[in-house]
Image 1: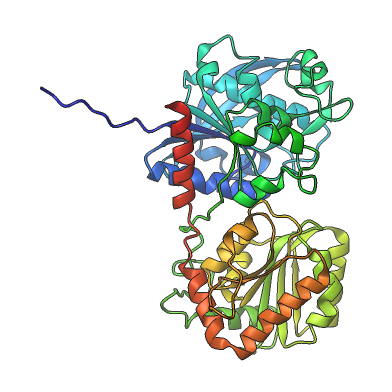
Image 2: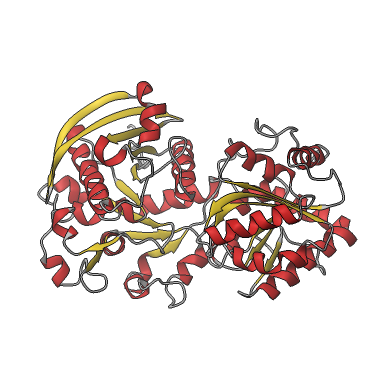
Length: 488
């Protein structure tokens, strides 16, 4: 008598997102799409990803892609063709939806027709499933750009059982961006009846709809990128006027913290840093510090506390607090190397400090991926005073590189950084709770004092930070359990 095979089939998952590494990036969403799917594949899942084919991708990658299909997309005012290309990378099958007029532009987002652009993208994704005759167990959508897909599968495409049968997971990476458009876009860009506005399903404020609201309501599970942020977004302070909608899904809302791709972010193998090092052999970290100081014409002082920043320079990221106290901070034996761009007032302030304190303050305005790697490797302290932070990637990278993060206690920063405890010696960084510059300054001075007067504790913190598992392994397993629970 043969044995019955009781092993459960691993789920098939389709990720749909507006950006993803290694192809295109504007924010942390791209890091997730570039790393979570391949970790899920390592853990046995079958994963595919759908992305728009943007201008930068068309110029850099198009010749390498294989043609898949061309088909009509018709919904509301959308009557056009979609071309689809593909390639397989790290075990993940990627599909790229091409529409030159809509996606081959200089920027990814911020256009007056974004409702139409991403309405087309979502319908083109659904039509792709029909063209491929491929219907995964789970569709995992991300942020407002793809949030209407759970809604469309159960309304516009409900004529097919396959669409109704697929389970839906929707992840909120940043609740502040909700895909809010004029109510006319419900028909024009989604092809859906006005009744969905009148009954409140799509309505968000007077005369407006929200793509994100549709995802929250129609997904089987709603996730966000840290446990603390999942609780914060239910409050008036962090809910961005979506807290009551989210509260209606309380029992289907959960937080799973992000990880980082440790194949890319690894000080032992990183090709963008001058000298490799590890938790067991930290000696070369000092070489990276000296090299970065030289690169920015800072005095090559091994005792100066080198503080790194890699960030968008916005109010959300807490940099107005930093600007308020920089004159005081620069009275100490510290050096700053800042990489980023954003609000003009912050950029102007940093340029002022760069010219006023040339031996202590370096500012690279813009973004440079290789430089980001060098800053993580060279710095002693990584500054991240965010007013809110759904998860954050930078503090994970900095800990992995033995650079201690100084963070505000919010969102994923609470979940990932353990504050230094002088009594026990435990911790992986420093944190403050207030939203004021004085609270930040108090903890900055605490970190500086620790660096100067308790070097044994500082080294212990580095060891504990580098020992922390910041990879996707554990979080991917949680997602896999979530998918399996939905399809069992």
